[in-house]
Image 1 (tube, rainbow, N blue to C red):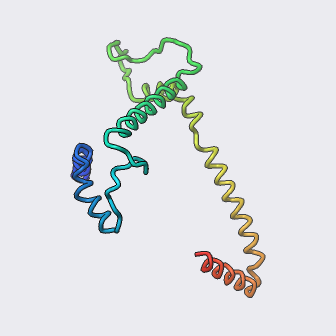
Image 2: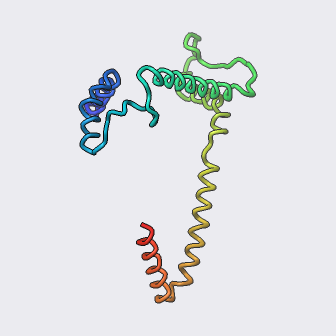
Length: 170
């Protein structure tokens, strides 16, 4: 597993530093083989770019977006916190005998600090909404199937109609 990961990391570094190797020896021959004309030049998200134009700007925008997200997470984690002292092992303070600073000390601090972020980014309400919608649809479908279950001719006609509609549409 480590060998494969090391190999992929090496390829990422190689093609990150010299992307022309991948483009000239893999992408362009593949495009020719598929019948495409690869002379359109490079593109970024489907927008054709000129050499030296968009990539530096796009990189700067991605960096700015990452910094803004990090700043937003930090600001949300600091909301509603008064400055107070924390009794915690700081690396140089003497620890009482029999007391050890473990991961739980730092995990508790991280949990209390990032609690506002977890509150705003909790996906459970959305999952529950989707789950209830799927459950309701399944209930409606089950009631409909139960009604036609005792009538095999009606079930066969409905199925034939669905097959004909699928063949006609696709």
